[in-house]
Amino acid sequence: MVHRAMTLGWQQSRGNVAPRWAEVDAAVRTELLSGMRLLAGLNNEQLSSVASLWHQRRLGEGQCLFSEVDVPSRVIVVVHGQVTVESTLFQECHLRPCAAAVEKVGPGGVIGCCALIGGGKGMTARCTENTEIIVADAHELRSLLAARPDIGFVVMENAFRIATDRLLCARQCLLAQFGLCEMYQTYRNY
Image (tube, rainbow, N blue to C red; front, side, top):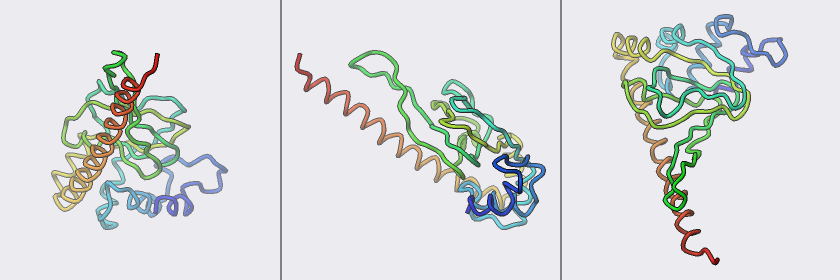
């Protein structure tokens, strides 16, 4: 769905340079937002209410959106490119920190859902290529969700599903990381 919205006008006759979020036709913005997992299930009127809260940003490869020590304050949606969500592990066998990729988030993917509930630290988000995102201030989004329970229920339910999926994915990555560390320690032949 996200890719269809992009072909409908997100990259209007400007080569590969996407127009600024404010320049994009309202119908295209609504369709782009409807393809995002966080806003799935909202009707066009509800999406129009949410559309004004988002702002566009372009980031280069390697740029950090937030680190695990930051208090989340923004909800981020990837429009183009890719962002890797990482967690720092302290491997017992080496006693030094090691970043483990928990998830790769591509177009339509959401980062920072925990900002909607005002908490949740612990992961770093870094662009793995030139990336374009749209960002909403979590406080403004929470205010809209409180004022519009019809939107709030759907968005929070979607945010819960996204966070649950990410937690399960992180668990699998951590188990694999620690399992490999233990395996290498056990079978080392020096």
